[in-house]
Image (cartoon, rainbow, N blue to C red):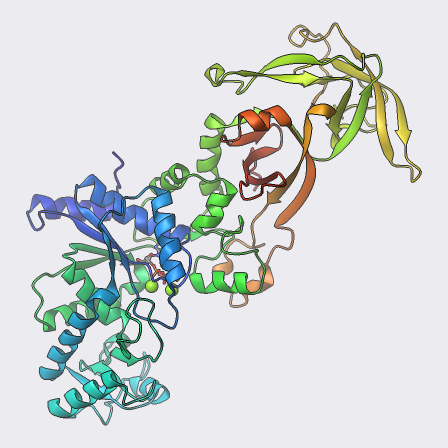
Length: 543
Ligand code: ATP
Ligand code: MG
Ligand code: MG
């Protein structure tokens, strides 16, 4: 079974050893306001794998406290992506909105303890009163309301007496606290927008800070794992739990967010890419989303391997894209079918071959894995080769076909050029060649080293589209740029039309492909009227 190493694992081990906990309970709490990305994979992997390893349980909790941003379609897509990753969800799905009534009762409790009050300053005033790092905040004039006044106003907020922004519930902590977050944080705000689950039952919604610790407590979460930027929030998390009558005390621990080269990992920024049509959608293969990675041909196993490789620490670092790519490359190297594709075709006629002759040549599906079987490919008079494998004249370093060079067709015969036919514009229409029919099995004892080029019989070739991808951004860390859109790579997607082998496609439809010399590709089953491949990763690291 997979294990997660690192400081969080050590903490859990100690807690179990010291009998501080008997059963580990974690949670993965996405807000349903967008699609999951690879940063979320790090978080879900951590939470689900720990729970699995220690035979505990991990809840998928939809953190749905802001109806302005959340939608049911995101709930559906998040569930789908987690199931695709292979994590078990049975009976472990919850929604923060299920606890709205309980959370509300806790708010009442705080008011009754004089630890919360209804503030009627507006948003700008609240900000001004809050002060800065250098300057302490000052008390709101509403801070000394009586309990009755606050209770009354809070109920009015709930009933819709106020419009948005006219009032909010704040914790009464300390306006001079060194942490700005502790200067009377907002616990409830008014939002007049239908909620995807509770519809119009509520007009007030708890903030993340208020709802999160309470939900963790209700669910009996033992280790509430979040990213480093919530370090400050921990004080508030503990303050709230200390001041309401909860039975269970969860504990928060922070770890470093995943940052990955050449991309942005925030739903807000990814939304901008989608809205500005810089990508074709959330599942564009260039997106770091789960749906994008899936479409490109990444597998759950390769993504889990990536998580294990990068580990979980308190140290912020930018992970090399190469590190992710090598996980899928290694996997595909073992699993994918080798076959030839011709991306930029040019017709070759083998003049000394009989028109009716079709020769079956048997080839290995994987050169190093004979257990993956063999298949036949058809050799015939008319074949396609790649334009880059032919030059009329070239220096000696060039190993492709030239007017002078003889080359070997991979798995087949040697050929040489006899003539070239041009169209009216002077472009090459076809190359006329001859083959040496004694050379089929002479590959190994051939004395002179000659170039080997790829080919597909014309009769066997079916048209296909190939999409080649490179990173969406031209710089390693676009996340820190204010105008990150200035660094978009305008050549991140290149479409090419070429040919693949008909029988390979029929037999190996469900395998990932390695088009030899070109890269690893994944077929897009969405299309029924054409064949489309997305490049998963190149054969070698190019950066
Ligand atoms: P985003 O900025 O993309 O909207 P978020 O943190 O607001 O991210 P949530 O839906 O609230 O998104 O996240 C669910 C969980 O995933 C949280 O526990 C969050 O900390 C974690 N998470 C989000 N992004 C990353 C990341 N890049 N690395 C690790 N964990 C992440
Ligand atoms: Mg969040
Ligand atoms: Mg966010």
